Length: 98
Image (cartoon, rainbow, N blue to C red; front, side, top):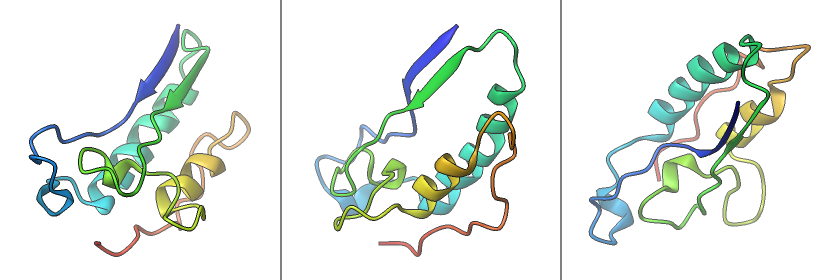
């Protein structure tokens, strides 16, 4: 199975990024739980995080890159997870709230 374009979104922001209900810390915690699990499943052949833009009212907390195209904490963690290191880098801390 291939899992494509998954991530955390909030479709009830009314277009206001400040109303996004999911913090970067919550999304990183989700990613730290789900990616290691998926890496260990032999029936999951691959997966792809949906990379919302940092300025997206619906997915700001799921952005892999900041406004300057630098990796966010989420992007750093996503990059650190590999078949050889399914747990990724546990020392990565969430970005401060925007």
